[in-house]
Amino acid sequence: MTSWLDALIQGVLLGGLYALFAAGLSLMFGVMRLVNLAHGDLIVLAAFVILFLAAKLGLDPFVAVLVALPIVFVAGFALQYVLLNRTLGRDLLPPLLVTFGLSIIIENGLLQLFSADSQRLRSGAIETASIPLGGGIAIGVVPLLTLLSAIAVIVLLNLIFYRTPIGRAFRATSDDLEVAQLMGIDHKRIFAIAMGLGFVVTTIAALYLGLRANFDPTIGPARLLYAFEAVIIGGLGSFWGTLAGGIVLGLAQTIGARIDPEWQILAGHLAFLVVLVIKPRGLFPRAQD
Amino acid sequence: MHPLLETRQLKAFYGDFQALFGIDMTLDAGETVAIIGANGAGKSTFLKAIAGLIHGEADNVLLDGTPIGARSASDIVRLGVALVPEGRRLFPSLTVEENLLIGDYGCKVPGPWTLDRVYALFPVLRERRHSATPALSGGQQQMVAIGRALMSNPRVLLCDEISLGLAPIIIAGIYAGLPQIKAEGTSVVLVEQDIVQAMKVADRVYCFQEGRLSLTGRPRDLTREQIHRAYFGA
Image (cartoon, rainbow over all chains, first blue to last red; front, side):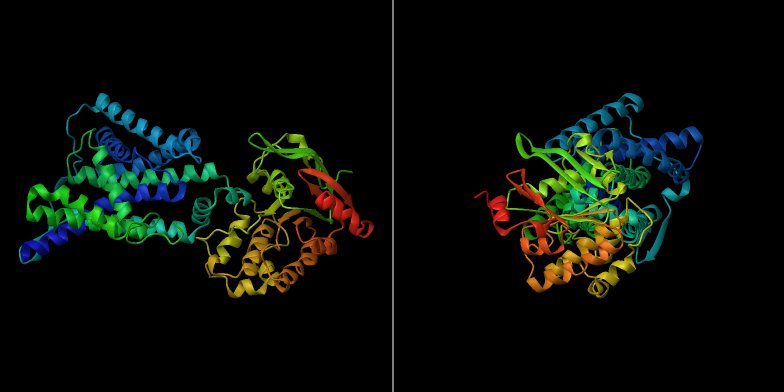
């Protein structure tokens, strides 16, 4: 019984990481209708940025990420403004092709710069610290911080989207691009700000990816898959749905692993398929999508 | 002295299809001009071309004598030309109040139109300010669409078929707000299929037929036969 309870708790905590992977993707799709095939590689790229800053400046990863956030915001803004805005239109294929190409460029660029060796973000004792809950169950501090950060990110994104003028502009642009322009909204700038924000969320996800597990330049596509599954399970366009989707995926994987360690990944994919069959629009879809 | 808004030989295309064939129009400050014509005459295209949603040559559209025909829609609203689009096209994920507030997002021009002033013009919107717009009646949605355009304090308000699909009593209520809008110094270009309504409120009328100007004049100077011929081409 204890082992099942432990599986549930660890599943929820793992779901926090998947929700962080998915939040950036959900934001980009929610505002720009952009299916970003490079999202997984961008998470890995951000992890290498944190690793690089931490090593060069002698910083703890938690401090290095604060240095990285403004840099990645500008990088995301520039990427959208200069490149991705040109791909958006009625045809869905150009953004898919361009982000697929971007994914290949990032992966190979990282292999060239950092080699295929596994890396890890080092943050001292906190990496292995845990909080005993009694009955032989303990929760890791980093997994707990991951889940709390995911909740904080979702709350902040909701505040930005539903309580600020820029959030209104995000939603208006997503609803009707043509009429948004009639409101004086420069949609290219709005998209670039959204991508910058997406990069910030992606970098927070990268911090916990690097603290919880080894990473190397080739693991991006699997992170993309988990992010996609979490977004689809939760329902497109809903941040709280994305958190729920991440937790469902995390729970499915840990329960699958408890039954048989080889079933961990398979169980996540099966949960995704089951949700797709039962609720094709996800658990918490946005009303007008 | 330039007209406030002027189109000179305005042409518009959808791909290879030409929708407008050289339209000349002027709008003076304080004036209301009505554009009438049958379905497919090019009325909505005309407003879209002025608002920057369809691009043409720079000097085909002039505001205060300045060419704006090649400017983007977001630039043109900042210059003082706002469009109430056909079919309202409110933002469904925004509440009534958010739809109004987004109206001045890109152009915070000081002027008479504020949230309170729009609520004074259409009091029912204050009561429904936290409602989702798909839950509103057609008339209320049209009020939001007009209020949203007014929030940018435009000098020129372009209204595309604001009576479309509404009951006569609702149309009367919406048109009752026009004198207040004009009194605040906003000039109006009104696209209407309801000829009677258009003739009542317009200072001048332009009739379109298959993308060409078929008649223009003051409502009192135009006969029923002239309008019929210009409207239907019969």
